[in-house]
Length: 585
Image (tube, rainbow, N blue to C red; front, side, top):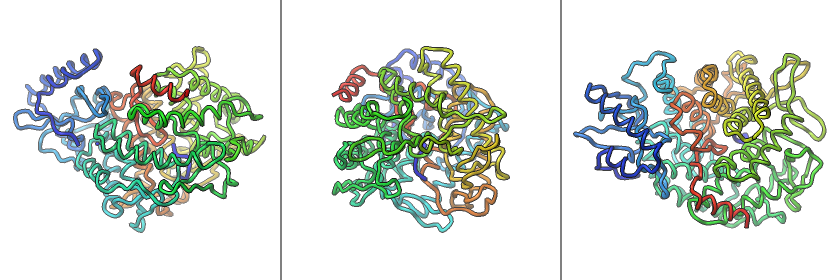
């Protein structure tokens, strides 16, 4: 979810079973690994080896046996060591075992797969199509804009606004998860040798945290290569100067990491934006855990405590879109669960989850928000279709953005984790999640000839109509479909996700280059010359994971930041105590 328009290790020479058994730390991982070893040995005796080339992961999972590389895709049942990366990696589904003749850049599978046929939860055919779409976009960016922020696919030129190779960093964990080993290694080498973190110009505080800091932290946790953590710390230490530029202590919108000069956008009335100041607790908690430096958690908690204690004439749990940079007080009565507010409401829940559901404040604040949303912001058409209102002062403008479509997935994730002790309340939340999910899908299925969703819709007279006609490769609906599938295993959510992917791939593709936004969902030939980094970081990743096995980035073990970068849940008491005590001080 994005508010604005906006891993090398040496292959082990030890046998997979001995190395794994020696390092797996928990009984459940040991049991899982033994089952997989037994299954693999049985298949090996029959001479059955899958040669699906596009599941080659980074080299830290390579094992050599009798001159043959058996390369396995990352599974989230793997244990992340204190230093990051995979330790005692448990074996993934059998279909991910590859022959040594495979090439990481190949997209075709030598194993026949019927449309819709799944293997241990995986749909091989659909995974391959999604990877082909990702590879097209990655190759286009690599050819025309390597080291720059984003590709402009129509003109084959480049766009820079963060000046840190944004697409490379945003796509690191996608490359890792999808098994593009060679591409990941090339990207890692660029980070090591070419990423400049001392950017001497004003850049977005919020977007740099969720995309750059978040992308580097996720790459570190998946790969274990310290270069990613080192660079994340460099980036964030520069960005943290934003907290010194307002009298309220809230971070300013734009910051020069070198000079510390800050700025506020004129279009906000030179006010701060809720989502931009408050969506950093995941990244900062993870930084404190990994570096043992309490400063990060303290900064995040400063903002959260301010919001928790903010006096305002709004329903408890709803927060103003704009904040005064001097006093920190609300600068308007506008309320948005979409643009400028979205990720704050997402992070209330996810902060609680990242800290192993040990922080009651985050839980309370999320429940206050979801209750207020249910009571004050849920609209219904005459046919019962649910939607979320945007308030302009006391008035509902009848409009809902595509950005709001992260909400059904977030609500379902809260229900899945029993965020409330009241089962009736959880049932009510899940019903809302399902209803909103249907509405968000209907934005694709019912409003345009292309089956692409407009950027916003309006509800009047019981009907849903197009408000903003652009399609911008956004991830929010497929993000929610990913959660709804993982939580319910209702196949309709996979079908919805697939229909959306096919429409995207059909109408947004720029042959031989990548994908582009569309100005009008009913006139797909009019494309915008932009391919934002979240297309590779979020949209295609969530689609891919929807058709992967549940063990790959297990939602019970990882929490995604708002740019879809997965962070390992903080479980060790020592780490939890460090983050919590830092935040409280």
